[in-house]
Image 1 (tube, helix red, strand yellow):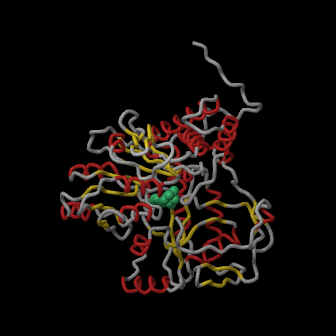
Image 2 (tube, helix red, strand yellow):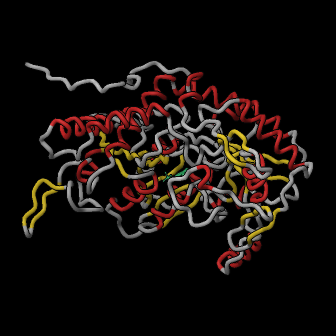
Image 3 (cartoon, protein in one colour):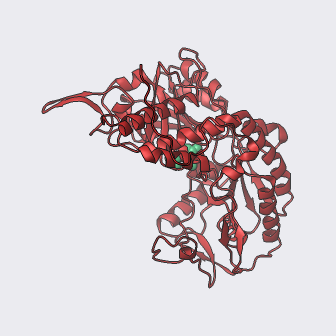
Amino acid sequence: MQNASAPSPASPATTIEQGWSLASLRANIIGADTPVPVLDGSTQPYVFLDNGASTPSFRHALDVMGEFMEFYSGVHRGTGFKSLLATRAFDDAHAIAGSFVGADDALDTVLFGKNTTEVVNKLANRCDWREGDVVIMTLMEHHSNDLPWRKHARVVHVGVDDTGYLDLAALRQAFEAHRGHVRFLAVTGASNITGIVNPIHELAELAHREGALLFVDAAQLAPHRAIDMGAHGDPRHIDFLAYSAHKMYAPYGIGVLVGPREWFLRGDPDMVGGGVVEIVEEDFVAFSPPPAKEEAGSPNVPGAIALAASIHILRSVGMDRIAAHERELLSYAIPLMQAVPGLTLIGPTSPESLEHKVGVLCFMMDGIPHAKIAAILGIEGAIGVRNGCFCAHPYVKRLMRVPEDDARRITEEIIAGDRTNLPGLVRASFGCYNTRADIDRLVAFLHRIARGEYSGSYILDTKSGTWWPENFAYSFTDAFPHFPFLGSSMPRACGEAS
Ligand SMILES: Cc1ncc(COP(=O)(O)O)c(C=O)c1O
């Protein structure tokens, strides 16, 4: 057999198989230490501590995607070399995304959507719901693993303890109370607020014993821990799992859903159009097998290539090494942050708890609103954090012990357009490339805030809930001249962050 190969690109990027070390990751992050303007008119290297929302890109993922663009083409039905190569790469990206979480090549299918939210919606849309069906979930869930299920079934939230851990006894009771009706247990692999890692294999066992399926939202778990869905037929097997490329250093629009192929063979896809069919007649449609059946329209091929490249890097470093590094960052950060006067960390902080916690630290400070702390850190310290309720309002209210009456009153205020009293926290979330120096910058600035040593005179915009210093505006066009921004500064709405 002849094997014709394509000419090499003029200056090839490092090969995808190259070995990566933990130490090499920082230099491989696009925008690590980018200088950004601060309030006093100077610039400071940016400290990125908002990885829980979205990570910056691995330069290598962008390079591989850039090289691929030489061969970019629509996939699956083109006959030219580029289309054949693109199809092969796109299909391989599915296999790589599946094997990263231990999917079974023969029994599972791997579907691409645009993010975790979209694929959770797809899963919920694709279930053959029956009258009286129940989905059990935890109070910890991100809205993306709560609201999609509410559209179809009765949702039962299981509570947490004061630290934020899932109440396993209450979970067992919920199963008992709804025995015979529970179709899914839907849980987060790791919380985007406390970082708590749930015992997903134990939860699988419990769900299966009760005749339910387990869905794991791994948006916050996949970037930080090795995942193995396990063998089909094993009671500890995870049935369905989702994660997002943009939280894994490949922010180019891919969400991954893994689940039993046989399950997706049944029924019609939730979205129809080109790409999902074998044959269409005027009054007849035969759908393709998954994953094509579930990926209507032209897919995000470059995003899939970038995700595969990111996965190669993470695997090459080793997920266990990444977990150990992030644990070390937590052990370093926790006592330093606890030493900031008036600062309270939320969630588990003891050394022994860190084994089951990803690199997320949420906190509040006495007498200073969360949105003001986040604004000062950003505008004066060039430190990117996030504040609010992180798309998990019920969990944050519980962790902050907001009384029910207050919660109801605040809801009414928000609906009336006033976010002054929105409860919330500040969140610093670490990625695999963060260092102790990043934490030192954060902690030093928190001490300054605690001493009242910030220079802006901050005013609250009650409608958005954001704080902004008087007489200050960024010039975004200086930093990024390609877009004709309509305004210079863009205070964002508070509390609706992921
Ligand atoms: C736990 C969790 N689940 C789901 C999501 C939603 O992910 P995406 O924004 O990629 O849809 C997030 C986003 O922050 C999250 O933290």
